[in-house]
Image (cartoon, rainbow, N blue to C red; front, side, top):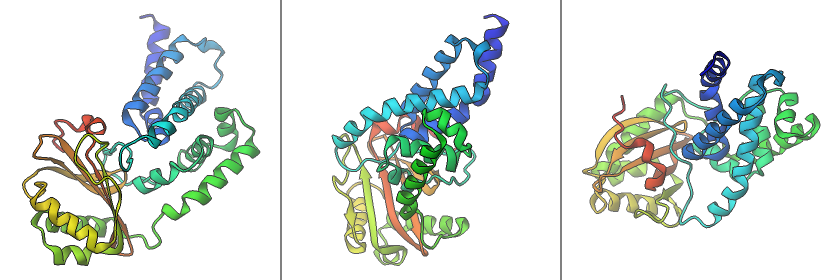
Length: 290
């Protein structure tokens, strides 16, 4: 490899984590995000780099437009998906909170691809609207409108009464202990009256085919999962933030991983997100929490 190619590879490698994060937040799939970033890498090496005035903007633009292409077909796949669709669990290696939590990612699913891109690039990744406009091939005013509409749509996904991170961790640990032991009284204390349980098995592992609404229904389900589904004997791998929410990674009795993430509001658990689809958990095989 010549010097120019070496420099180009090093330049891309330094920006890969940011590009990967943009692609994942756009697509909700780590595997698809990796494919997009790899495609961008190949295009970067095939480009006439001397003519690229702003290399980093070029890479963001390339990744964004590739994601928009993927999203066109993703909507059809989501419509045909068996049961609730959840994004692939993202385990932050630094275990730090993220402004884009799992509920917000689900809310973004209801946005158009362009609204989603404008919102993420400007509100999350702090790009100027002039830069967003270049990435999307629209003018700045149009991008402002796209981001504004997106912001209004996703506002409801943010907690009304946020719970401090440390308190969330305490409540999450109490929930996992109660769910594992089948302590129904403690579960009732922890769950909101309108709590929702989402299980994503993708038709490939047993899971609730529809969301379960309400405290009593969710408590009964958790009791059954503890005794009949083996939650009381699964191997706990780690308790980590999963897409910005307190969660647990476990190895279930079928020797496959599972993640549980908890959404809090006003001191109670508002939603429980359980991902079981093996296609979304391959990156957690052999996860040790280290």
